[in-house]
Length: 610
Ligand code: F6R
Image 1: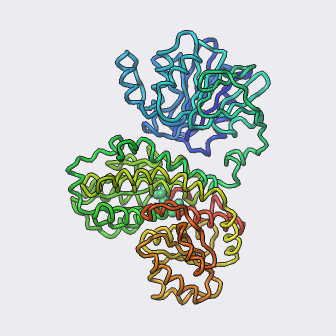
Image 2: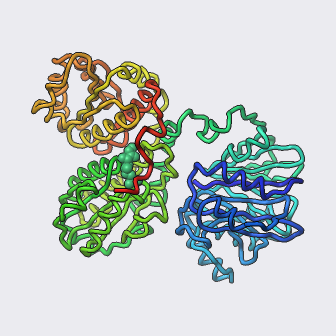
């Protein structure tokens, strides 16, 4: 989720590119850079840090050139560093590239290019693109880029600039957005609308497989076969703020809607569908013996990440048959946990900067325990200090209430549990392949849930006048109920409690009164009837019960006030689906109550104090 801006025209490009980068800051960044082309010479400036750091680096220097490309980076391959910042060049600075996405086969391409004499200066996947273009350039930049992208596997939005071809920028897209802004005597390229809106509202949206040559007075778009095509101009009517949110009113709903894609990113390159295998060899470096020797797993995290950890406990205990203790990082660090050498500590943190999680990690490390981190931020403290890291690749999460990071943490935990189970010989023939098929099917099933939110909005309207609510479930459903309850609390300020469904009658049932909203998650087959009995106890006290179960469980409709049917999937994977309507309920309730959805009171996105 990096930001791209490109300009070609008659004005000085530097201020336009810089303004564009600032407009894309909301996407997250850890480094930034730009390249300007003037009189056949490319000037490249880049470095780690915020956009303002880049501006400082330029200082009082007068940067000239009416053609340029710029990039703000959210690290994927390679930590945030000066060398890894974009634009990337080939062996010389005559070809420069900015890129969003992931080149999956970059290692083999890099080895081949090195053998052919190319010298690499970064750890990124992107750099292979610059060298490929350099390799294939034979007087026509468009053709060189065409040949380069034929060789890469993965996802990309790229813009290429060459000192040998100063009249045009070449761009291409596959699975990552790229927009061309059409001006008068000038044109722009960007990953997102905010970067161009102050200059033009007339745009082309490139589709997957399309390429374009962008000149000052002309833009030509080509399809995958290299044929010139006519594009329809899209006139943008969104204001700048709406554009940042992709047209959604809040980041939270945008991020909820991005979950199918986020899951695909977490899975990308980590499953071999043909062989039916989870492959984490590029991410993790455990020896077979290590994987077999662990006797206990600790999962340590805070808030929503802790709730993902609770799901992880069920997954590991069921598949790997290894005991798992899930701890809040703020408790773990102060209770002298009994960590043995044959334990593994898994820390989960979206930001990778949460003070308590980091302290817990450091404590476990001082005891010589191996740490595996599940995090979303490359270069974060947690990622740097852990022994092993599994990135979630959810892209920057801006809303304080975590949604897409949570769901990708779940996916990472499924991958890990399957990987451990397989390594320890715990899976039956065909079981792993079956899990992989299910994991691959989840994005589409979530899309089905997201396709129509009308009924959820109606429930949100009904509960929005209440000041208390309950969430119940058993086993995996209980873990999801905890997350549902936290989401509602933090976004709508409704006091919400989550209970293991069987536990309510040991006290909290006293709080159930007429009309009080109770969300019941009932997806787990083994305990389905038990949960239904608990629902009946609640209904007998006249609560307003909203249930979440699978299609085919129509009998539940008779017991409750409203049922949401989830697309069918093995109940072992239910949390990935059942959390989605709960996130939506929280979102629409918060909107209805006029709350500050993306920035709830008293909260911060990253809690770097204990
Ligand atoms: C709730 C939420 C928080 C975070 C918690 C940990 O929606 O986002 O509870 O989950 O502060 O943050 P990370 O995952 O960054 O360590």
